[in-house]
Image 1: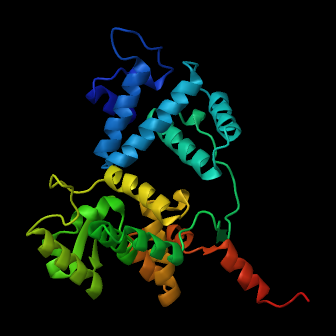
Image 2: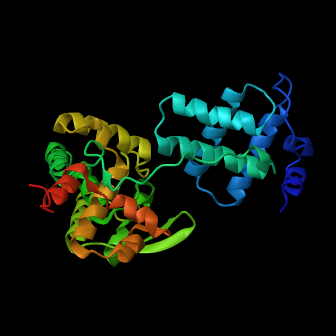
Image 3: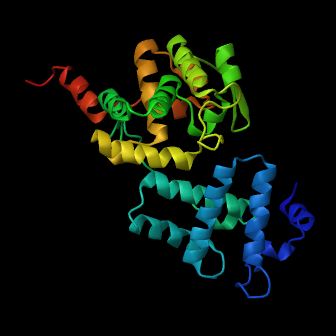
Length: 303
């Protein structure tokens, strides 16, 4: 569908493919209408709610910088330079530029698109960013009084599941020994290790959970990102583990590194994690700076 067709269908003025007017108090500005049409388009493309929210946040960030100026390549380049000056990481800058570039493609304004920052891939991960197995054990020990939290950490690290996929860990799937996960328009099967399966069923039985999601709030609703994130931050302080390392995705990366160390099969790991691009998987298994240094020392070419 052409952008003009889509805009007509959404009852958005075709003029939004040109420079939109500033906001007024009576109705949404054309800029706002264009953004709404873009977000609606993303929804039709079956992007996740989280992805759509990120696109909106990044485009509004650009709007705030642009301050109603006419869209142009020069303004996009200035936005790119400004982001660098604000000390955003290269990955963050490129992520925001990708969102804004997508918005311009939707408006058929390819003339406003800018290239991402170029960077050479680092062959190792910063020690300050990666959660180690030792730190994971410390977190488990600190969480010991909270049976649900211990089991949650073991589930995240034990099968490398995304936080958004926890809802698929149900009594029914655990009994079956296999979880069917639907994420990012893909469906994949995840096998449960025997020990984890037993722990999940024991917990469900003890809590009187007979069906549905096992990880739930006191009100019976599935745990969400906010519930878990807050508890992890408190737990990091209790365990004396750097708070910057303790977030759901880092348990997934810990699983990836551990799995690869045992199997050395990158393609299989990509399938397990649900990655369509194996280069994404490569990022997960980077050794830490300390490990990389130890490997360099073992070359024994300098004495």
